[in-house]
Length: 195
Image 1 (tube, one colour):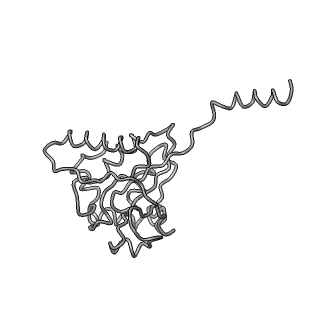
Image 2: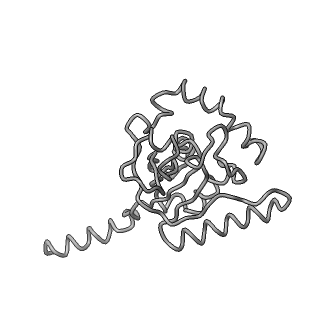
């Protein structure tokens, strides 16, 4: 066998082991510490990064965004392996971890910078987000209208380093914040206790 033939045989054998490139999804569900923690538990999620999206200020700081004057929302950019978890499955996780009826923020965090939103990166993501939103509305017709926005993604600005993996670096403070904010109590009221 020639070296070229050997190389082609090796590539043919390795082809089934190759994985699809990681995909990206962007979700806003209030506090990005909590949203990051919720998504990083999912098998197939490579990582989640806290940041800001949807505003009109270049390179916004946490102080600027949390004050509510930039138009940004706190969000997470989720990198995932589409061979292990689909975008639709991530949307199911998203809807289970947000109050889609709250127009004034999420849980104890109030203001437009904490509103819920799905930022789509292509038309397939937009269609999936709209389909799952409509299915949720049909499942609970007695509830108020869903106010979670479905918007085209704009530039995502990573948050400061101390916000990344906050739930891992500061577990006691994180758990106290999450409990005090009433996030899980409200989610249980909306969707029941996870099994």
